[in-house]
Length: 429
Image (cartoon, rainbow, N blue to C red; front, side, top):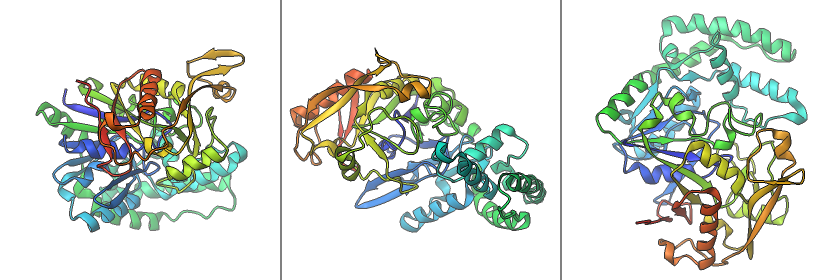
């Protein structure tokens, strides 16, 4: 088994991009298998910061092949803007990039539909990024009005396809919002034809490519987007994303059997954050929450929205770890907690007078959950220069041990700063 997977175990934004970047040098291929440009990864090294949404973090390493599989939904304009941004800084990466012909395409009608639907929800808005991701996945499931990358790069049939879909979407949008501006099928066709011409050289059967690569002994790294608690089937529904963002989505998104994965790394923040609506039992709507937000720069990579912040939730994270079957943990942003005198960890919930360590399936039940907290002493020492576990303050090591104990997995990686070098690799031998 020559494959490794990096999975976020919380509500996303766990700094997975840094771990993928660190591990890329040990792999030949990096795979993005779900989500769209609603996800964001930030990678820092060499004094530079890279913000990625659709491209795998492997794109930053020469000689590593980056693969975007059929489980991803692609906004061509956003994809090309991101690609141009990388090539302008790092040079040509064309030979190291593959896009699945099975990946579905995000069109202007998807953004228009999402905006109208989210507006109509009012106070019950899910908090989407308004990038048409959910509505694209909905068309994928509905099949009738879906367009895949393989269709996009066939100009002889694309015009007819776009015209047919736009006729339907204009009727839907007019019914939902009589003030909506009708979509122009010809303008969309012309715009997307230009995108198709640039993207066509990358489009191929990535499923076949990955099968052959694994058979040849190539080392493959799967890069999860968002987090396990946002998984469409297993997360905090309906406040979830529109794809399987836990480890359960690797096979369906990439076409690679999960038995090929020899190491599953679960990435967690040393605290908890969430974006958008939905219950959040350990949320800190106070000065400590704001302190964590400021110290951790907890503002969305894609949207810029301030993230909701709270104590580490071992109930939710432990559920994410079991869901994805992780072998070990990477604890990120430990340095963010360094100025606090004491730090709380949620070790259980109390729901309707009953104590439990099970994560509720029903959103109403999670909304009634009160965190049972374990208080630990802080370390109040700058740890950003530490490179060995034994050099961390005893309080910081004790905190890591508690996280490992409550989640039920050993900690193999600790991040003490945003840069590639600010990382502790734990030797458990």
